[in-house]
Image (cartoon, rainbow, N blue to C red):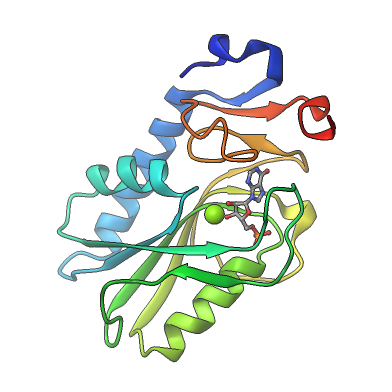
Length: 184
Ligand code: IMP
Ligand code: MG
């Protein structure tokens, strides 16, 4: 789905589909070099990071294992609740693994802070993060993100995996939603 398909709901396109894929290729090249000779485990947080994981995992030039975890911090609103619940756990053991978390966006950072701690508790050899988007204005937890895509302003965005109330995940670019859509 493209911007033109949901024009009435969108205030502005922030990052085009081409810019997203160029950036992911760039990060993938960096990660492939950094993890050369290793077999990292890529962990994406469902559902928002699925689009990023898909493009990113195809762009890396080293063998990787892929797994998913479903966490919830939001409900259906636009504010992080700060309470993380595991809806669906990983299918593999992370002990001794080099884990790279693939995230859609770092907003409060609370989800990520929780996940990094949890993976370390489970005995991961290393834990790093690739976040496609970052909203620095909203950080509550300070987490160390080694691989970053784009820094965005403090606005609620949708597309490329990101939703509002489960909609717009299949938009191919990243866009700012008109406030009246979620205030309605
Ligand atoms: P946190 O506030 O950093 O814990 O963010 C948790 C999750 O909330 C992210 O991984 C996203 O799935 C979701 N989220 C945060 N900001 C936005 C946004 O602007 N649009 C859509 N989802 C968001
Ligand atoms: Mg997420």
